[in-house]
Image (cartoon, rainbow, N blue to C red; front, side, top):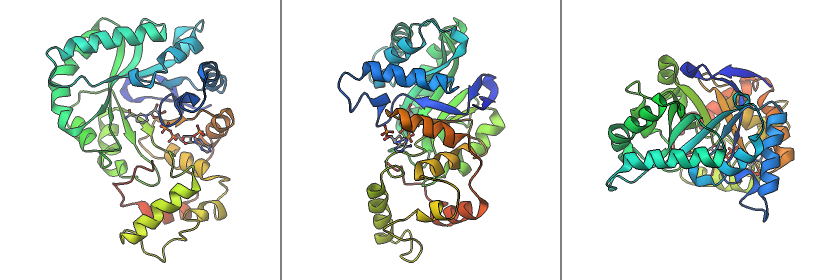
Length: 314
Ligand SMILES: NC(=O)c1ccc[n+]([C@@H]2O[C@H](COP(=O)([O-])OP(=O)(O)OC[C@H]3O[C@@H](n4cnc5c(N)ncnc54)[C@H](OP(=O)(O)O)[C@@H]3O)[C@@H](O)[C@H]2O)c1
């Protein structure tokens, strides 16, 4: 495994992080009685050298992470978890942050969280989050229950990073989580330069998702882009839109190419991989540790998707 420093937090983190949410939630979504399987997935990641584990209140995988790390020295892992945003109409949203944190600590079996985020903040709720929720988060930080605070975007409805761009205007956050992939590299312009300048740690989500792991989904998505005139008919083969990545580079699979693309982006600290499949996990960690894709392939991707800020790849 390779390790890096997560911005100004100074945390030493593996460049591959385990995403315990997403479509797979460590296999919890598809398998019945999957809890033991999910615990094994987390342990497998740790055996592969991953030390960054990302979960959330609403993934229902905090307890799984807690079981997998029980008995390990606490500083062996960097735990990132998230609080679902209390709605602005609540009378005491500050108290909800405290209650949520206490619940996460209990489920994770720990007395502190390394990075505690507000989860999937919509642009329209950002001001509320900044005005009301940072205060209790900072108090918890002073109490030693949180080491660093972060904010994650709701990428599915904020594909152009409006909220995160807003959040970086002031130096309030230690870490951000952003959607970035070869299908939507827009964070390269709107997020990474400022995050690097401010020393904000950057976690990458949506590197692969469905479009880059399911050929049919990719075909449908590209057919739609051609129909809308976003991409010219002659620019790619609609039956095998990203075939050139496998023909013209040493990447063996599209998920491999997709994770490598993200891993070598300047400004990305940790690439999260979300899976319920042990073989995929092994493969993905290996991919994240491979060298960058060749320049010619990157240029081709840039000409096809470089200007996209509306795709999620879901
Ligand atoms: N707003 C937020 O805060 C937010 C939102 C979304 C995600 N996240 C975090 O980011 C993490 C990463 O996102 P993600 O889980 O969507 O991850 P991802 O790594 O982009 O994509 C995961 C999807 O790709 C498939 N996949 C992974 N490796 C594969 C391989 N080698 N071959 C074929 N298919 C493969 C998985 O299915 P299999 O299970 O079959 O492998 C799953 O459907 C999440 O787990 C979560 O921790 C945060």
